[in-house]
Length: 403
Ligand code: HAM
Image (cartoon, rainbow, N blue to C red; front, side, top):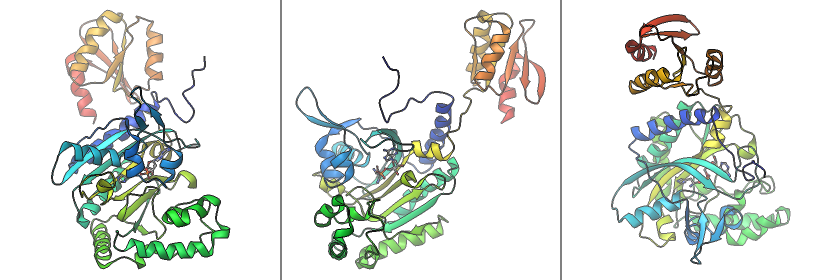
């Protein structure tokens, strides 16, 4: 039997996983500051939710869903994205009024795997529901920006656009359709089919980027309400000192967007997978899935891509490793005391030689080695900067002083 994980999926183990934990802790910190508590929805949903919510002309729905029938004959799909499920959950909860949620977890899309493009990938995201103001959009974008900057993603660019609403978009779609019809013979067969059904999807096509030429711009077609909303979002981003670039061709790959849309591009990622995340407003999504009018705005970021852009850091997960010269039995008690006092410490339960224990300490990248000699209650503390000996009860405090 092969021990490799299924194609397009990855196992994540230490020390790489510890790098992920650092970034996830940063995520929790920023979402907490902005008031987004955890929301968790099932890994699978009724297939219909994504067909109606994400859109049946999107690649996500037509080509990438993991759909199966369960024992009861229901068609279910492993969640390819989190927005439609969160909106469904909020509608089901019977909640009213402004609501916030943050999520982190695996999502599934049947794609051609490559670096940064996986069949199971990990997203972190937020959704802010039942809000319509440009301030809500600006806040959401700011959360993503602060988190990505704090996580240290290099060379970030924020691209933004407005996709208008059901009032102004049809006029734009007509103009775009007629532009694309004039160039249909240069477009791929996939894009040709989309000209009538959903021409916005053609703007999203990577293969047809050049063939599309200079299409009309949505921002030239915005109705007054959408134009002033977009203008406010931009001026608030300016006030928050979040820099951005207008991208007239940014349409995103999912059908539920209205008004503000945005994407973060990472500087160090190659072009096919350079979007570290994206999002926008989706004022019509709840109605698309059969619910009441429920405007919202949010984003999701791809953690696999964020970690790639950070160089996939390998991080130690311990504050210290405890080497015992008197065997495992005493070490168990000493470690327990330190752990109770807040120190992340590990030791060798198997009673191996002192040399083997030092080797484990190095392998686990422990920044500090504590040596328990068993004579009295002293612990020998070894760091790169030198050694010192302290009574056991003072060791935890020594760690606190190090930060
Ligand atoms: P999305 O653009 O489809 O948006 O995905 C967001 C991010 O997830 C992408 O920018 C990328 O970093 C990551 N991602 C997507 N597919 C893969 C993959 N196959 N492998 C690795 N990473 C991937 C959404 O999913 C929307 N739900 C975002 C949103 C939230 N809009 C409003 N609220």
